[in-house]
Image (cartoon, rainbow, N blue to C red; front, side, top):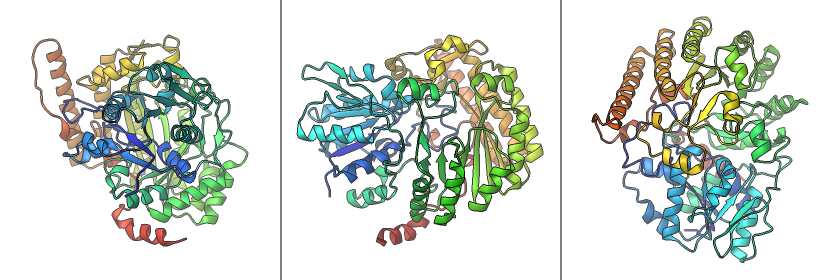
Length: 562
């Protein structure tokens, strides 16, 4: 078996989730993974591909997923058998603050002489505080760390100095942190490999499928993703990937795009192996200058015919959907409208009218869209309980108007558990009507061991207390669930199952609050709750896909091709 020089580890949100009783609630209901947040960032694939191309052997190990799916998986025993030149751990999403640091502590105890490297959006924002932890040796900062990671690995192997490496925070022999300038900011993404053949080769090389799986049920639902750019044109107030965040945290003044030809190659490469949906991250229209037309033409030339998911950052009309339908016979649409309330939506940073959203739905359906996902959020500026419940009523009207054929799928979830670091709300909470309960990395780390998501929630607003946000989340979820059953989005039996789960969550949180107040309450494992949604069914998020097992002949055939 090959010995990797870099092992990239993905930690669970809470390292002790197998022993702790935690009511996670709806914090992961609208993403593919469970509340363990076992889905590792797509950057793992591009980093591994870049390093492997330069001769640095790299292995991805999804520790979170192995802990989730293998009850007997012994993390320490597994890690003790690895002896790379360095370990890398992502702290991309802030809900990994506890798990990533605890996993790093375990690694450092088992291998005190092997460096531990952190990276990711949250790691970049909190790099000074993160570098002060004894289990952290390096932090590689920025939104494009493939090349800085390569240079750091080369320097670790050669034993040279670190003071000239871009984007790197490091410690000297006395343990004092130093922070080199964040100067490596890619102007485009054309030199970054997104090689989905890498995980397949990794399975063969290391004889392990479980470690490289992206999330819990990926074998049944092999969804993949490609990215159009790094950076964003939007300024959604609470988003750590907004224009504000990229400028202030990642020193990015303009977007770095991937060429349409290379992006089409990425999609074609994936569909050589898999028949699951390919999610194109970023609105293909935001680059302007005909980028969307060039991409669609490139896709057409490559004969891409599998399902493709397009993300919209603003409404679209007949011209756009007509072009898409001619090239992609099986396409789906996602758009986050945040609220039905135009004042709330505008306060959040999006100025669209409801009439434009409705026209987008109508036009997409008219031009063959297979599925249209609408996402709403709770915990926004100017949003109170009445506004949230107004969204429930508005969504019911949309389903009444456009619900035929089961194309429209609405979802609602709270902005939870944390406000993204680097966002406008995180940097200037009072300006947007927020009060933040946690500011430091350590405060967020400690919050993640709370007994319920209601205790983790990091903020309240002028319009809703933390308890208001929790209460109206469940109230709105029941309203959405009932409307989806009424208009045939889900079956009646499924709706009853979801409502029972919602009410069970509410009872558990009430019991925890009583216990916290000294009135007693139940305690016990909640492991069986991890794989299901608290306020919806996980399958509600899934587009049609052929399972990984059914794709095996295609994978083996592709590997044999030159």
